[in-house]
Image 1: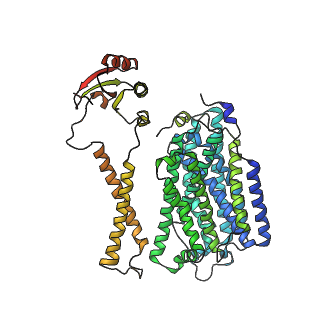
Image 2: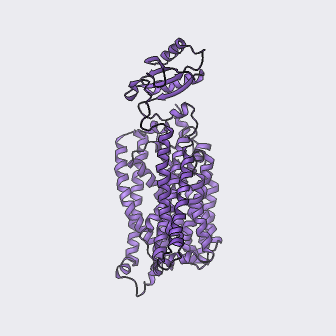
Image 3: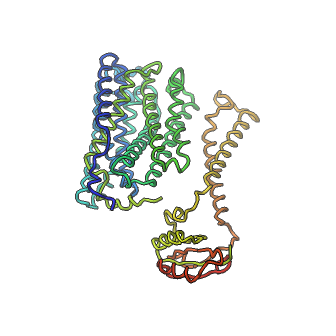
Length: 388
Length: 176
């Protein structure tokens, strides 16, 4: 049998010193930024915090969907999304200090002006806003810890009842995640431009969350398959299915992007259209085009044939393109609200370094916490023999 | 190709998958395999080439999208220009949803129709019934008796040793 226990305990070959250096350098740059240019640095910290939180949430969502659909092929790769959920911890920490302590990130904290509706003034008040942020994070953390702990417990005793328990936990997570995540995007990101609104905004950010989450899963899985303990355990069929998911959610992202754009373009109401007029003028416009190319056009065209989805190194490159697109997407979400024209300087480099290093270290930490695949999961055998 | 075929009937998925591997290695010409349900990995075991059907889908999808963009442009900007909210007549974003739907419609429906045609699943076609049990619980391997060197007895012994529950010879296109 290929399931050699010593093989499974082998440490995943992630260069911790390299990624630790990335994260440290990024944190240092942003810390300096907080002193020299606080406005830009806080906005960049929001991007890092949101990027880390959504990485964690993408992992938990993947695991929850795995249990709720009764999927079996995902068992062998499940430890990777579980490990991603670790990113919730540093991400939540960054989000908390950013949204609660950044002095001028949210203009509504100094009052919304005369034209705002009563409900909006009540909703966007600092105490209620803070309480909501804490609730979202508490809900996700609770489910995250419970799901990961139950899954790891099954490694020890092989109890099949734990699979049922995890299915119930997943149902609870998916429902509460749907509600809290939509509100969280409204609070943390949409309220950067407090007079603008879009009801599809939460769905748009869910699309970005899941697309980038799949890209991270693919990168780590290809890495573990070519260089690490999952060699011979993950096969082309698993890659093909992950590739199909990335293809689908890339297109879903574009679909939602266009849905939001088209309705605003069609009705052409100034208070709605301002979001796009700001992003389609000057040097922002090419970035919007690049965003669409990285998140949709390139993955769509490359992943259209079956062969590219079955080839690990091609799939990994597409995943890298998607993750670059994710960073740009978050940049285009946050920055136009803060500065008149785009800039790529020290603080943005710090953001990229901290994001890449942070995500890598979290996954590394998560993977070291348990066997690299759920060795006693009742469906492991099915997953290893997965065929389409 | 002659009109004579040898069929091997198997009772399980594993038996027929194993038999396919062995007879292919021996150089037999497998005409087709009939199973009561779809077996994953069968097409790879038979060494079938990838279907060209996706190309049909791609071409028809692009045709549908192209025709629809042209039609919408022609109706709203050329033949009967309509002013909607002061927007330009050839406002492309407004065309996107319908273009998308027509692309999916044409690609989807015609892919199914082309598939039915290629797989000869249309009314009036005489079905090949080599073994009635295939609609229930039997797996049937159909071998072409390619030339004079084909030895029926040897083949019968080989298939029996591979756990075939029945080996028989069929003559004629309809497998009677």
